[in-house]
Amino acid sequence: MAEPGDLSGPPPTPVPTALEPALSTPAAVPDAQPDDALPDDALPDDALPDDAQPDATRPDEEPAARRPRTALLLVGALLLGPLLGAGIGYAVQQHRPPTPLPALLPAAAPGYPAAHLDAQDSAAIAPRPLAIDGDLRPLLLPRPDGAQDWDDFGLADSGDWESISQIAMETGHSADNFTQLATNGFRRAAVTSWQKDGVKYRVQLVQYFSDNSYSALAAMSSMRFTGTPFGGGMAGAYAAPATQETYADTTESFYHGRALTRRGDVVVDVEAFGTAQVSADVVRDLAKQQWERLA
Image (tube, rainbow, N blue to C red; front, side):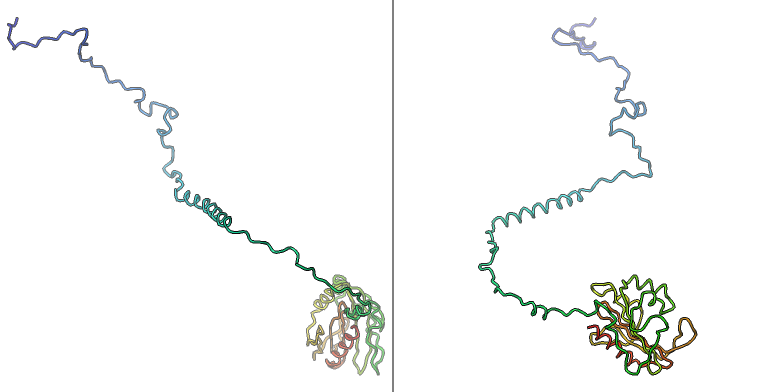
């Protein structure tokens, strides 16, 4: 037993009281991991939070790029700009004074003198209609002095009507000619013929169904005829080449002259056939005289 006042022995053990709990060191227990500290591979994938899910993106795939903020700002500016502009424009217009509108009716209505138009005066100033809406035969050129009869290759009688089939057989392409005449609106035709000084002449008038003469113009274009233009407000051209041609049914050669013009919806076709070169001036003059008779 230690003596009183001896401090070399062990210190006395304090006795706990009711007001002071005993201080003691808890017994050591083995380290236990909480449930939320388990390794990731011990839980199913769907048990992990969204931000802890394993990245399923393959190495060769890149995550979708986020929309840049600059694009959002531009879109916002595009939407906000017109609204601000419209608001400012409305505010400016609202503060402007109203502009008075002009009167709907003039101060005084215009007046016109009351007068009756004379029928004869009205007819005198009206455009003169062409004399080609009737019988074409009286409009054909008369036979010149000293001319003889010619049967026009047996196609049609001189000074009489000519059918669409007779016109189509004038050349070696009768089927094509018939189709072109019917397509262009063939209406009627008349022809006259004669021979003089060894040259055979034929003058043909072909009229088409047309209110504005487009059919006759198309017919002239389809003939593919070129030559010296008439001029002076007269459509068409004339020619008399120095080269020979051959008839479609025979091997006989001839010199050909031709003039082609138009008055309204009537096509004037003048042809000349000779054993020598035909005079271009004669063909031109005949076409001009026939053209003037249609006025």
